[in-house]
Length: 452
Image (cartoon, rainbow, N blue to C red; front, side, top):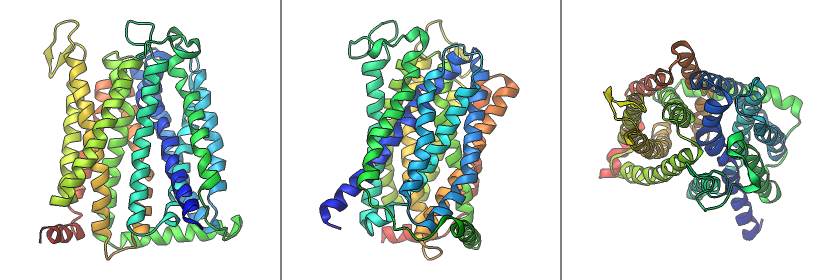
């Protein structure tokens, strides 16, 4: 393969993160989810419970399908046909979110479409990540992966900026941030700016995922589907058994599984909480998203340098404590009070506090995700192949992806309170932190080497 074709294939692969990120940014976190909870469902607490149940169902389906699909796809070799297959329900699910009208009497079709898109999004990402090893070697892979991650952040930011500039009117105004009427005559009273993020996400994906299919080289086809199923399942069992034989690695995977699940739940419900408790609209939520994403990029940068100086374990520990503090701050904030102290009517302090919490959430998230990967390498070194270690890392992050949303949905439904509904996330962070203390090993030796 010529260098030009290789570079074009790498860029097309990186664009897939750009193509997929608006689903997390616009749909799952900052725009559509809060709209669904506060406008499609009359009761925000009930809406949060329903949304959490939908994420739990989709996450559970992904946890069941992802390791099996990955093992089978690894045996068949060729991956792009699988990506194309799961892209179809993703696009259909996103586009169908336009149907979510305010005060919808029967919201379950919308929830099913969202769950379909959620599961399909996760499965396409798993398969696309499996194309990475053939795009470079050694340190080159790290640069490619990091650039793709960064490009995804930029895509999410740009999608939010477009929503603010072209779709969402400013509070108390009929104009967007760019001074324009919402494009295509979208009617805010009918929820159309928020509903439009579904078709926008689908179109964004179709346009920017296409280069992957055209230019990124696929793996060679190695076998047919029938024999690949049984062989793939055997491979999966063998890899999991090997990880269990290494105590430190196994405990770390359990710890990261818990705190990453807490982080995913916090992102998924942060915007919903702000909409239901503080009454934020689409414009404020999009601004919140831009702030959190920008802080995430900064947090990853600072965390990487702290990792180099002190090792990844202190960075992971500090980031988790920051996230616990964010959760406590959120629980203590309402429109009427902060930390049980009453506030004057119309006070902007809750908004300022929540924006600050969002910045800390983004910063801690960026540092945590970057340092967690480094810590995995340190612990797995001389125990298991790095590719297998990252495969288990991805698997462990998806196996329990439904736990956080399930706990939030259950607590919200039982208590009828959005505040108390968020509280189980603290348990996930603390449990992950406790387990982390028992996963000593390679990281400590590696950290000492850095200081010599």
